[in-house]
Image (cartoon, rainbow, N blue to C red):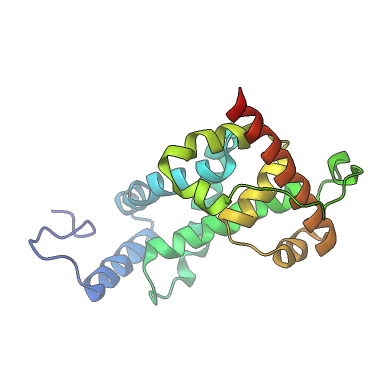
Amino acid sequence: MNCLGPQASDQPQTISSMASEDSALVAAVLRKDRKATAEFVARYADDLYRYVRSRLAPRYDQVDDLVQEVFLAAWESLRHYRGTGPLQAWVMGIARHKVEDYYRTRLRAPESIEDADQDPSAPASVPDFHQLLEQDELRKNTWRVMGGLPEQYRLALIWRYWGKASAREMALKTGKTEKAIERLLARARAEFRERWNHGQSS
């Protein structure tokens, strides 16, 4: 029986038993136990892959590399895990930071789209991104449109509306001004709206 795996029981695991299991797995991985390391990967690979894939779409060619970066960062930092929260949440936190690093790198690059002559304050009937991303029947069309956007537009929208980052946070992390981020978001929303409306009418 695998002492590190889920306990076979009719009762759901308690928080304390889950914490104990997480701590046992971490200790085994730190001892360089190969089975424990394999279990660590198996336990979190699917969730990490889904998370990273959804936030890099349609750059699926980058997903595997970024997931590997998350695992490497987790292993390098594992000795700092204190067990104050679920191990899964800790690993996903690393993934969130790695995805933000990806966004930050891409959005720091100067692009001609940022300098386009367009009034970002112009009123726009923009779809509710929170709603679009959460409703199953609209998700496919939403990602079809997102996949056709310039990379900076796509990443800015995902980071702002799905990652829940504020324009100020995005500015601080990319080294751009808040106004530059707001202009980028305005142009990204306008481009999304145009492509969305075109798709609905075609």
